[in-house]
Image (cartoon, rainbow, N blue to C red; front, side):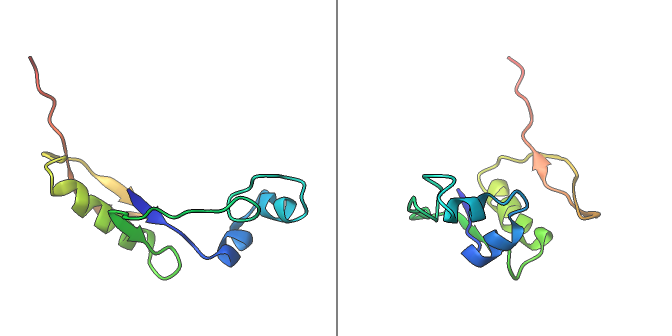
Length: 95
């Protein structure tokens, strides 16, 4: 599991729908991180840093993780912000 846990202030700034503000005003109940505790994963496979790292920088450890156990065998192109990363996809087995 990849964990992306931005600081609460960043979540509030990115909250285009105003849900966080509504939760703080008690208009929404059981909102994670406001009145419902948020519990980050105990042992994430990787932690994404969406404050200091670019989307490409966050994609790299995910692709590297998927390449290790052999999830990827053939080439596929993933376009992220007009840059290309070339991992492989699993090959289908025909029975």
